[in-house]
Length: 165
Image (cartoon, rainbow, N blue to C red; front, side, top):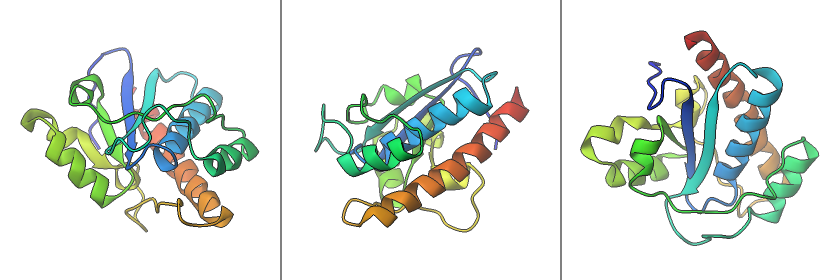
């Protein structure tokens, strides 16, 4: 992975799922907290968005908030927003939770910025699975699986970012 930055002082990461109420806000909260606790030397700007505008302005799914809270992540203040074209210049990486959302990002991206959109798990070095599954129609165990995947991938990503500094 080559780390490129829009700003020499910080790495800017946008997590993306469909509605920005389950996976991407969870990823935002997990990466932010793990970076704060375990990699305080890194300068990161972290946000999340959805490829669709279904939930603009709404908080994350209550099940995501609760699962995150149980592990020390605060999702409650986050609000859903939709990916904007300017995100491709504001962020170094737009990290999608699955292939469908990655395809949507590639469709939205200006030609010169399309390579900034990647699958989060693959970008972070996950070799077993490509997608973070959508827990929306599942039970508590599905939200726990999402957090397990996000924690693991976030730590790998943070290690790579720290090595590039």
